[in-house]
Amino acid sequence: MMDFRFDIIAEYSHFFLMGTLLTIGLSLAGVFLGSLMGLFIAIGELLENKFIAFIFKAYVGFFRGTPLFVQILIIYFGVIPALFGEANGIVSAIAALSMNAGAYIAETIRAGIQSINRGQSEASRSLGMTKIQSMRYIILPQAIRRILPALGNEFISLIKDSSLASTIATPELMYWAQSMNAQYYRVWESYVSVALIYLILTLTANFILKHFEKKVPVK
Image 1 (cartoon, one colour):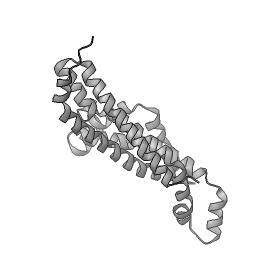
Image 2 (cartoon, one colour; image 1 turned 45 degrees about the vertical axis):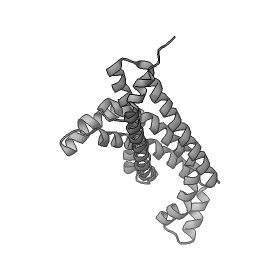
Image 3 (cartoon, helix red, strand yellow; image 1 turned 60 degrees about the vertical axis):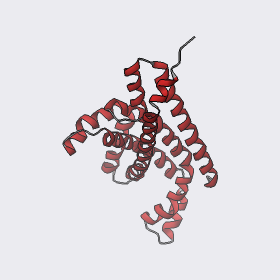
Image 4 (tube, helix red, strand yellow; image 1 turned 120 degrees about the vertical axis):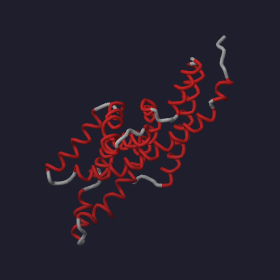
Protein backbone atom coordinates (compact mmCIF):
# COMPACT_ATOMS: atom_id res chain seq x y z
CA MET A 1 0.00 0.00 0.00
CA MET A 2 1.33 3.44 -0.90
CA ASP A 3 2.57 5.45 2.08
CA PHE A 4 1.00 8.88 1.67
CA ARG A 5 2.74 11.48 3.86
CA PHE A 6 0.10 13.95 5.05
CA ASP A 7 2.62 15.53 7.41
CA ILE A 8 4.62 16.78 4.43
CA ILE A 9 1.49 18.30 2.90
CA ALA A 10 0.72 20.01 6.21
CA GLU A 11 4.28 21.37 6.32
CA TYR A 12 3.88 22.91 2.86
CA SER A 13 0.27 24.03 3.33
CA HIS A 14 1.19 27.69 3.86
CA PHE A 15 3.42 27.61 0.78
CA PHE A 16 0.55 26.12 -1.23
CA LEU A 17 -1.72 28.87 0.09
CA MET A 18 0.71 31.58 -1.03
CA GLY A 19 1.14 29.80 -4.36
CA THR A 20 -2.62 29.59 -4.82
CA LEU A 21 -3.06 33.32 -4.18
CA LEU A 22 -0.29 34.14 -6.67
CA THR A 23 -1.79 31.75 -9.23
CA ILE A 24 -5.15 33.52 -8.91
CA GLY A 25 -3.42 36.90 -9.15
CA LEU A 26 -1.48 35.92 -12.27
CA SER A 27 -4.64 34.58 -13.91
CA LEU A 28 -6.73 37.66 -13.10
CA ALA A 29 -3.99 40.00 -14.28
CA GLY A 30 -3.53 37.94 -17.43
CA VAL A 31 -7.20 37.90 -18.39
CA PHE A 32 -7.71 41.59 -17.52
CA LEU A 33 -4.69 42.90 -19.43
CA GLY A 34 -5.23 40.30 -22.14
CA SER A 35 -8.81 41.48 -22.62
CA LEU A 36 -7.69 45.09 -23.01
CA MET A 37 -4.99 44.05 -25.47
CA GLY A 38 -7.39 41.71 -27.25
CA LEU A 39 -9.96 44.45 -27.78
CA PHE A 40 -7.30 46.79 -29.18
CA ILE A 41 -5.83 44.08 -31.42
CA ALA A 42 -9.24 42.91 -32.66
CA ILE A 43 -10.20 46.42 -33.73
CA GLY A 44 -6.77 46.78 -35.34
CA GLU A 45 -7.31 43.61 -37.36
CA LEU A 46 -10.55 45.04 -38.74
CA LEU A 47 -9.04 48.34 -39.88
CA GLU A 48 -9.32 49.20 -43.54
CA ASN A 49 -5.59 50.00 -43.64
CA LYS A 50 -4.19 46.65 -44.80
CA PHE A 51 -0.65 47.30 -43.55
CA ILE A 52 -1.71 48.13 -39.99
CA ALA A 53 -4.18 45.25 -39.98
CA PHE A 54 -1.36 42.93 -41.11
CA ILE A 55 0.79 43.97 -38.14
CA PHE A 56 -1.95 43.04 -35.70
CA LYS A 57 -2.63 39.78 -37.52
CA ALA A 58 1.09 38.96 -37.40
CA TYR A 59 1.06 39.51 -33.64
CA VAL A 60 -1.88 37.13 -33.26
CA GLY A 61 -0.23 34.59 -35.54
CA PHE A 62 3.01 34.62 -33.55
CA PHE A 63 1.47 34.23 -30.11
CA ARG A 64 -1.07 31.64 -31.25
CA GLY A 65 1.50 29.74 -33.30
CA THR A 66 4.31 29.41 -30.73
CA PRO A 67 4.30 27.64 -27.33
CA LEU A 68 3.52 29.73 -24.26
CA PHE A 69 6.53 28.14 -22.58
CA VAL A 70 8.85 29.58 -25.25
CA GLN A 71 7.18 32.98 -24.97
CA ILE A 72 7.75 32.99 -21.20
CA LEU A 73 11.45 32.25 -21.68
CA ILE A 74 11.87 34.94 -24.34
CA ILE A 75 10.21 37.55 -22.15
CA TYR A 76 12.02 36.48 -18.96
CA PHE A 77 15.54 36.18 -20.40
CA GLY A 78 15.29 38.74 -23.18
CA VAL A 79 12.54 41.36 -23.03
CA ILE A 80 12.33 42.16 -19.31
CA PRO A 81 16.12 42.42 -18.73
CA ALA A 82 16.39 44.66 -21.80
CA LEU A 83 13.68 46.97 -20.45
CA PHE A 84 14.42 46.94 -16.72
CA GLY A 85 18.01 45.74 -16.45
CA GLU A 86 17.23 42.47 -14.66
CA ALA A 87 14.83 39.58 -14.91
CA ASN A 88 11.72 39.43 -12.73
CA GLY A 89 9.67 36.25 -12.59
CA ILE A 90 6.30 37.72 -11.62
CA VAL A 91 6.51 40.61 -14.08
CA SER A 92 7.60 38.24 -16.84
CA ALA A 93 4.81 35.78 -16.06
CA ILE A 94 2.15 38.50 -16.12
CA ALA A 95 3.54 39.91 -19.37
CA ALA A 96 3.70 36.52 -21.07
CA LEU A 97 0.24 35.40 -19.92
CA SER A 98 -1.29 38.75 -20.88
CA MET A 99 0.30 38.88 -24.33
CA ASN A 100 -0.60 35.26 -25.04
CA ALA A 101 -4.17 35.70 -23.80
CA GLY A 102 -4.44 38.93 -25.77
CA ALA A 103 -3.87 37.06 -29.02
CA TYR A 104 -6.55 34.46 -28.30
CA ILE A 105 -9.03 36.98 -26.90
CA ALA A 106 -8.46 39.20 -29.94
CA GLU A 107 -9.66 36.45 -32.25
CA THR A 108 -12.66 35.83 -29.99
CA ILE A 109 -13.60 39.51 -29.97
CA ARG A 110 -13.02 39.85 -33.72
CA ALA A 111 -15.35 36.93 -34.36
CA GLY A 112 -17.90 38.45 -31.99
CA ILE A 113 -17.78 41.81 -33.78
CA GLN A 114 -18.10 40.20 -37.19
CA SER A 115 -21.06 38.14 -35.99
CA ILE A 116 -23.13 41.32 -35.56
CA ASN A 117 -25.29 42.12 -38.56
CA ARG A 118 -23.62 44.81 -40.68
CA GLY A 119 -27.02 46.44 -41.05
CA GLN A 120 -26.84 47.65 -37.45
CA SER A 121 -23.61 49.47 -38.13
CA GLU A 122 -25.02 51.01 -41.29
CA ALA A 123 -28.19 52.05 -39.47
CA SER A 124 -26.21 53.75 -36.71
CA ARG A 125 -24.14 55.59 -39.31
CA SER A 126 -27.33 56.78 -41.00
CA LEU A 127 -28.40 58.24 -37.64
CA GLY A 128 -25.27 60.39 -37.58
CA MET A 129 -22.99 58.24 -35.44
CA THR A 130 -19.30 58.05 -36.22
CA LYS A 131 -17.55 54.71 -36.68
CA ILE A 132 -16.15 54.94 -33.15
CA GLN A 133 -19.56 55.73 -31.64
CA SER A 134 -21.17 52.92 -33.60
CA MET A 135 -18.54 50.47 -32.39
CA ARG A 136 -18.74 51.65 -28.77
CA TYR A 137 -22.49 51.92 -28.30
CA ILE A 138 -23.96 49.48 -30.82
CA ILE A 139 -21.54 46.74 -31.90
CA LEU A 140 -19.28 46.07 -28.90
CA PRO A 141 -22.01 45.69 -26.23
CA GLN A 142 -23.70 43.00 -28.31
CA ALA A 143 -20.42 41.31 -29.23
CA ILE A 144 -19.23 41.18 -25.61
CA ARG A 145 -22.44 39.48 -24.49
CA ARG A 146 -21.98 36.85 -27.18
CA ILE A 147 -18.35 36.07 -26.31
CA LEU A 148 -18.67 35.95 -22.51
CA PRO A 149 -18.51 32.12 -22.42
CA ALA A 150 -15.33 32.14 -24.51
CA LEU A 151 -13.75 34.78 -22.25
CA GLY A 152 -14.61 32.64 -19.25
CA ASN A 153 -12.93 29.64 -20.84
CA GLU A 154 -9.82 31.75 -21.45
CA PHE A 155 -9.66 32.63 -17.74
CA ILE A 156 -9.90 28.97 -16.79
CA SER A 157 -7.14 28.15 -19.28
CA LEU A 158 -4.94 30.85 -17.78
CA ILE A 159 -5.29 29.31 -14.33
CA LYS A 160 -3.78 26.11 -15.68
CA ASP A 161 -1.28 27.80 -18.00
CA SER A 162 0.11 29.85 -15.11
CA SER A 163 1.83 26.67 -13.91
CA LEU A 164 4.45 27.27 -16.63
CA ALA A 165 5.62 30.31 -14.67
CA SER A 166 7.33 27.89 -12.26
CA THR A 167 10.07 27.46 -14.88
CA ILE A 168 11.24 31.04 -14.23
CA ALA A 169 11.15 30.71 -10.43
CA THR A 170 7.79 32.39 -9.98
CA PRO A 171 6.49 31.07 -6.62
CA GLU A 172 3.04 29.96 -7.76
CA LEU A 173 1.50 26.54 -7.10
CA MET A 174 3.65 24.39 -9.36
CA TYR A 175 6.81 26.04 -8.04
CA TRP A 176 6.04 24.86 -4.51
CA ALA A 177 5.09 21.39 -5.73
CA GLN A 178 8.48 21.10 -7.38
CA SER A 179 10.14 22.42 -4.24
CA MET A 180 8.42 19.74 -2.13
CA ASN A 181 9.41 17.02 -4.57
CA ALA A 182 13.01 18.27 -4.65
CA GLN A 183 13.24 18.26 -0.85
CA TYR A 184 11.48 14.97 -0.05
CA TYR A 185 11.43 13.11 -3.39
CA ARG A 186 7.70 12.55 -2.89
CA VAL A 187 5.91 12.69 -6.21
CA TRP A 188 2.41 11.80 -5.07
CA GLU A 189 2.19 14.26 -2.19
CA SER A 190 3.52 17.19 -4.21
CA TYR A 191 1.81 16.82 -7.57
CA VAL A 192 -1.47 15.23 -6.48
CA SER A 193 -1.91 18.04 -3.95
CA VAL A 194 -1.51 20.83 -6.50
CA ALA A 195 -3.58 18.93 -9.05
CA LEU A 196 -6.47 18.94 -6.58
CA ILE A 197 -5.96 22.64 -5.86
CA TYR A 198 -5.98 23.45 -9.59
CA LEU A 199 -9.13 21.35 -9.95
CA ILE A 200 -10.84 23.25 -7.14
CA LEU A 201 -9.80 26.59 -8.67
CA THR A 202 -11.06 25.73 -12.15
CA LEU A 203 -14.34 24.24 -10.89
CA THR A 204 -14.94 27.29 -8.69
CA ALA A 205 -14.14 29.66 -11.54
CA ASN A 206 -16.43 27.72 -13.86
CA PHE A 207 -19.28 27.87 -11.33
CA ILE A 208 -18.87 31.64 -10.84
CA LEU A 209 -18.67 32.28 -14.59
CA LYS A 210 -21.76 30.17 -15.32
CA HIS A 211 -23.66 32.12 -12.67
CA PHE A 212 -22.46 35.41 -14.18
CA GLU A 213 -23.46 34.33 -17.69
CA LYS A 214 -27.02 33.76 -16.46
CA LYS A 215 -27.11 37.32 -15.16
CA VAL A 216 -25.97 38.64 -18.55
CA PRO A 217 -28.02 36.68 -21.11
CA VAL A 218 -26.50 36.24 -24.54
CA LYS A 219 -28.72 37.66 -27.26
